Length: 109
Image 1 (cartoon, rainbow, N blue to C red):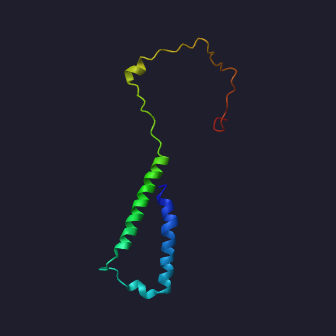
Image 2 (cartoon, rainbow, N blue to C red):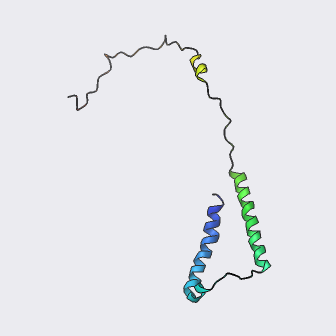
Image 3 (cartoon, rainbow, N blue to C red):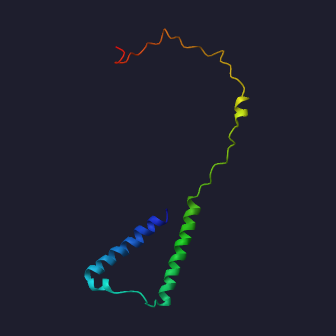
């Protein structure tokens, strides 16, 4: 995506707008057919050069933006979870329900 959006925005959109302007200026050109037209080799080499350039830009942007995934962490099995050591809570005080005020809802009143 990092290469497609700039190519689309800066290369294709201006050409498309220019094509629309030319078609408005010369409406008879819309009816012309391009089938069975021989393209000179100089034009095909330009197309090939553009394709090679876009592939190089794609690889370059991938190399710059690629971040490898994190290392795989083992998921514990059920037996490993059952065999975990028990935690003693001798020093943790229990909540005194008398000191905590109760909240009454409108439906209870």
